[in-house]
Length: 77
Image (cartoon, rainbow, N blue to C red):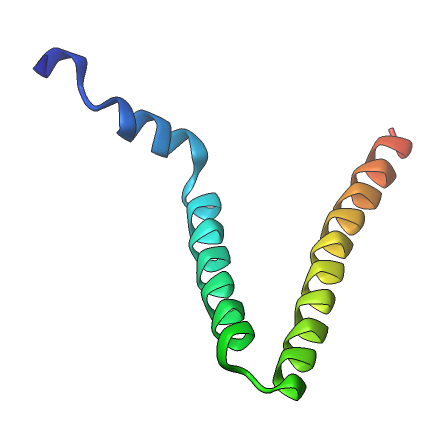
């Protein structure tokens, strides 16, 4: 058994620390959004929705920028 090592360590290493950190941040964001949804005023819920909508758009912008950077580099070759 000791010879087999720890399979979870191998999996965790293949995911990368950045992906794990991002998942933790997503969980924290969900917790905060849940709190606003549960106890926030109508105005606070509306503000939270605007923040989440902008966050989603920003994340897709990141992917779009990365995709355009990749296509620019392949066009140059």
